[in-house]
Image (cartoon, rainbow, N blue to C red):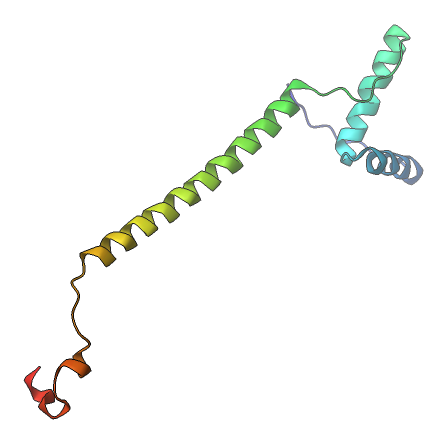
Length: 112
């Protein structure tokens, strides 16, 4: 379960966290979470720290966002296709007729 926590750090530590996040291409919150998880594991197990772990809920969130982007793109394509289909139907349904000012004599404009 995800939980929101607020805490205060000194500027030097925040600069180190920001530098680490920029080097690894992740955001600040993710960097802090990596530090906390890996530090806790190191304290309990004494093992090595692996910084490339991906949690299941983050992967699920990324997949869900990707699916939503694809869905909106498909809806846009569907609307474009409907518009094109409607335009083609209207154009094919129209009968061919002459331009009004070329088919009548210009002096008989009252006979329209």
